[in-house]
Length: 328
Image (tube, rainbow, N blue to C red; front, side, top):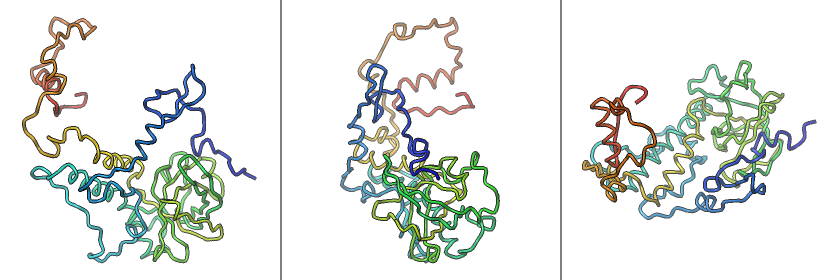
């Protein structure tokens, strides 16, 4: 019988810490100091609440969708109201720019799962080959145990791949990748009233190759954790997109609301007068012979006029957009 914590290191990364700089990692271990030390400033920064007036509350919004957001009805009046991306003229403020882009990106991240759930509500017995929403469907899902991991309380679930309709080569498959967004519903409800949103915590190869396959999931918040091992669930995911990649961008947009926004004058305000960078304002000229340790060929660097102009603009302006063929 498999032990409760089997493949724990593979599931939750509890292997040896990598050597890294203390300035950029939470846990640091070096050859001179084998005992790990914790950089609490990073944790404090990540966990700090961003409270900025005039941000429409998006800085407090969780990136993982709620049940109501996924179970939105098809009634036009019930559809989510997503702000527009203003493509003409400057934005009224940095906060408005960040808010709109946060909501647009978040909708792109969660809309595929909402479409899958909507399809399952209408066709609860559909097979994957008949899905028009690129649905991945796992029936006979059961919560078997819990693990207290660094990232939170992870629920281990087993499932049946019957509705896939074919053998899955898990070594190559992109199904249930860590960070993917999934939705669970009781088998006797099929998303009519209940939808539990979760994120895949880990997918060890040994776990998905056994019968029945198993993965670990994080529920969206502790209050939504289900613990009944007898309850049968159906779990779905979308084959479109990858939530984890967008999740970090969403959290960064929230953090930016309370920080300095680089290039805001140009990106938000559409300022046309591009200023020189700060280092050039402090020191308008510099002898580059003291900064470059390689010999300069007699013909310079072999740049044509357009390349030389692009190089000059990159060194002398805060913002430069250089376009060219691959290798530019």
